[in-house]
Amino acid sequence: MNKKSTKHELQSAAYKARSRQAENEINKRFVMDRLDQSLPLITDDWQRVEQLLNLITEFAPTEMVLELSGAIAGFADDQARRGYLLGQDDIVKELKQRVA
Image (cartoon, rainbow, N blue to C red; front, side):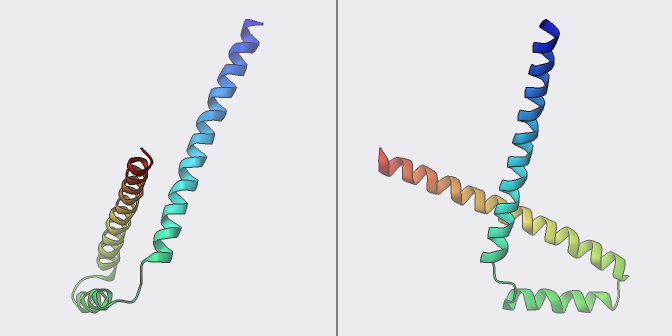
């Protein structure tokens, strides 16, 4: 019986770990969807970035430009996600203070 309870505990722990991981993925997707809906894609700043990327492609290999733009986009996404989460944290703290 000891083996069954150990096996059950291991299965339960594995299930909880998978559940947490799935929940983290859902939260991450929610944040990314929310940012995609809220951030405008066509702005003066973005048009300037596009112009610069087009200019650079005349001199640098396309592969390098794509790698650079991918790295910049990844960095920007990460910063936006962090900003969103910090904003949510600030809202929670403010609501707690108002309730108290």
